[in-house]
Length: 266
Image (tube, rainbow, N blue to C red; front, side):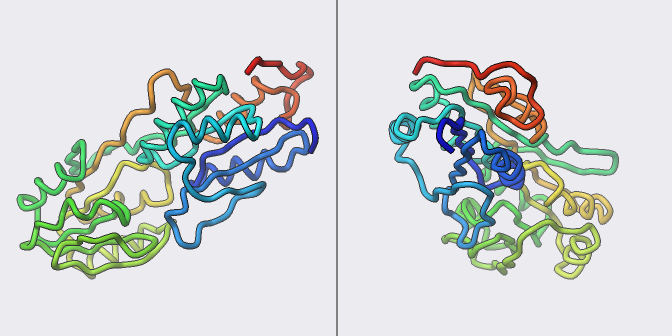
């Protein structure tokens, strides 16, 4: 592994695991995936893995220098805004190239009834006018935004138990995607759901609920994702990330041409 290009993947998503698997197969690359540690039993990617925060942008910059990272790929969840901001500041400070891998946003289609909002509190403010039985699929954090809605009933789904405070009338469903349209349709019917609340995380793993809501004519409140920090290059998939990295450190990446590795000052 001596002399290998060291790539830090800020991960936790399916795309991050797929990217790590491809890169870790090449002996010319050293791959470290960083997980936030918010899920009790995360799906571990290939290559080296670290768990936990860095201590803000200064801590991340120190880690990049100490471990001689050649590139950072931010493949975190689209709503992991803090680490994305920290990565942009840290990478710029130590002159390490940074890429954001962001799956495309969901797009409403014919038959969808979507209400797009900018935050969870905005979503909560809309709910009393949309229905009494709510399916919350916004993750285990942030349910405090709905805690004051004691007149509504909530089905809250997350991988791990949600963090309090919760709405007083809440049933917790612990489950992990991917989900099927058939299962999501049955779930909405069984719990007599009037309205679905979700974050615009994109991707196919949890998109089945949107199809189910469309077929059952259930309105959906969609929380818009935060923007990628300014000046950071963005690709929509693993293929795009591989192409970016190939151009950066060719021919270390599988399938790269004969161009020699580029040298950079730190």
